[in-house]
Image (cartoon, rainbow, N blue to C red; front, side):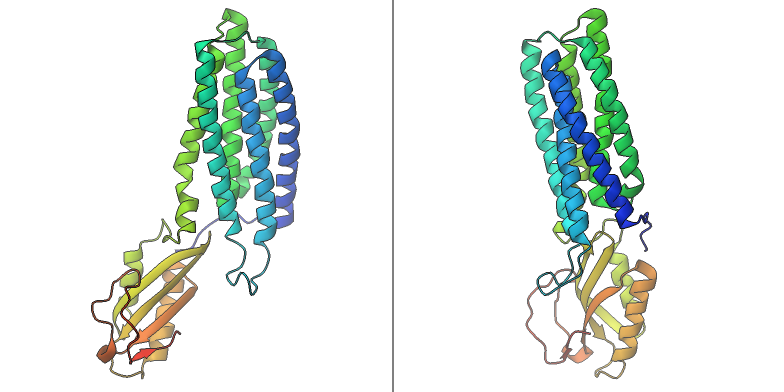
Length: 314
């Protein structure tokens, strides 16, 4: 089960992220100044969201650099999982920003302040252009990276928030509906929370060494037991070492009472895993029928001690 994802030159991707950082930094400053001047919480809310985007972009940029380091004695699996950590940080930031904006919006709903509508509309329009540009910069990259996907969703929600800010400013100009500004702020916050809470499960699952969500662990087990010479499989661990790199280790019980067919069975199992599921990193422990673990768990590793007939890892 191979993963299809976009491949973009790392240096080109870094330039895109760097450009997005500068664009969001300038926009954040403009929106905060304009929001304070106009008295618009929605504009300040959008600025805070943009600021979280800028911070997320910086985190993602650094994570991309670190992830390309080769494995070493300290990090024997390499540094690729840093991008998953970065994604988790970014989604957590989105959740905190969303909760804060709901609180601020609720307080302003009680006593809506005077808002300068034209300032809100103009800066909202500028924000929409920048947010759309940033979203386009990260769109083609996000399909192959949970780290960049978190950024893309940040930028997409920003663009939609900017549309809401423009609508709110227009209603203030036309009808002096001051309650619209905090109401839109709460709406933006709820949408931010929805995006973050629906996406944060992926990085959490990977960091908890969960099996890939698009891979049926039962089907993997069935494929291994279907290989000639395999009697049983147990103590299966299936996880994602990195976003697009699946690993497996397990115990395999051979049909025979000796190690005569071990090498042939091992190669057949590894080929099956690679061809059918894209699993190229597998660590297999072999046991003979006479000395197999009794009552061993299919998944996980219930402690059963070392059996005399157990072959070291292959």
